[in-house]
Length: 158
Image 1 (cartoon, one colour):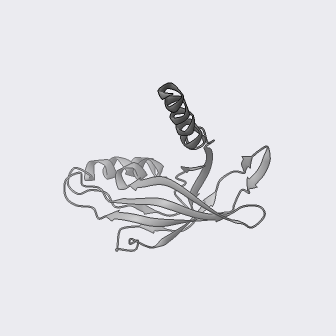
Image 2: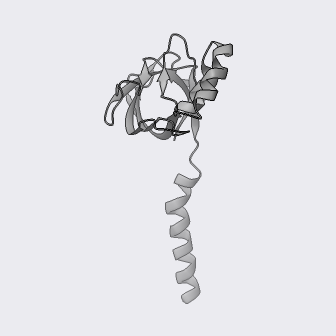
């Protein structure tokens, strides 16, 4: 009897937790579609920031989210820059978009933008040297301009 009880408990546990553990995660590549900046306290907790889908997202061999679709990311955390390697940071945890049938899709995925990491996506390569040296004295601000800086991110649709 005890053995049957243990078997049923194990079976119920597997049925409850396996679907979430085995759920397919689909990558959604996005890039900023608006200026994202901590330079003048422009981005704050609770703000929605626009992103754009870089390439079509497929689910069950069909386009699920089309390229160019707008994605709104909810700012979850903002850290201003400080002195000596203290770089600014903006975190997102919730993203909202629409699928090809215009249904709302909410994606719970973590994305963090660090001021230091954004330097490698800046266009003017010789000027980057001075930006990297400047980090020693003052941390870098997050300052992304979608027309100039093409910084891709991946969020995971489950």
